[in-house]
Amino acid sequence: MLVLATGLGAITTLLFAAIASNSRNNRDTTATLLAQMVMEEISAQNIFAGGGPITNIDCAGTLHQFSPAAGPVGTGSGAALKADGTIDFTQAIGAIPLDYSMVYADCSNAGGAQMMYEVRWNVMSVSANATTRMITVAARPLTTNTQQMGSLTLALPITLRGIGAPTVGK
Image 1 (cartoon, rainbow, N blue to C red):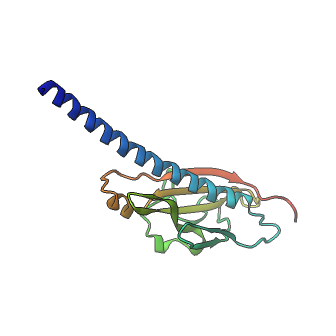
Image 2 (image 1 turned 180 degrees about the vertical axis):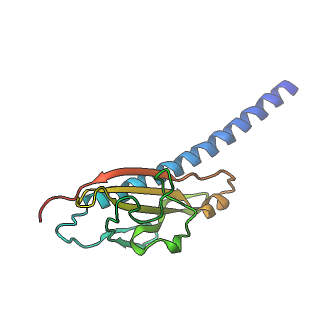
Image 3 (image 1 turned 90 degrees about the vertical axis):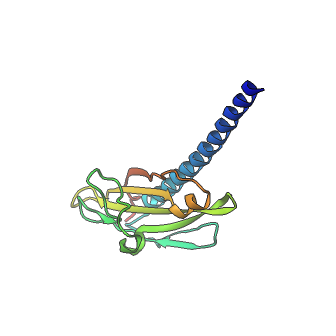
C-alpha cells in the first residue's frame, strides 16, 4: 500500500506540473500571436498613401487604433529599447507615446478570468533617407493574470523583430 500511495502521489504531482506547464505555454503562444499580428499590421501600413490608422478590436470590445510613424535611426519611436534591441518593460506604460502600446483582452478565459496582454512596439527607420522600417514588437501577459490564476511563474515577454517596407504606390 505504501509503494502504491507513493507512486500515485508522484503521478498526481506530475499531472499538476504538466497542467501548469500547458497553461504557461498557452499564454506564451497567445503573446507570440499578438506580437505577430501587430508586426504584420504595421508592416502592411502604406505610409505613402497616407492610409488611416490601424484598427483592431479585442474580445472585451475595446477598439485599438494606432498609426505609428518610424522614428530616427538608432532609437526609433515608441517603446524604449534596451541595449540588446528588445523592448524595455521597465518603462511605465504611461510613458510610451500614444500609438505604440495597447492592453489587449484575449478571447479565452483561463481560470475563469479573461487574459489580458500588454503589447508594446518600436518603429525605427533603417537609414536616414529610406522608408524601410525596423519593427520591434513585444507582448506579455499582465502580471495580474498570473496572480489571478495562482501562478508564481515569471511571464517573460515575447519579442519579434522584422523589416517593414510599405507598399509602393505614391
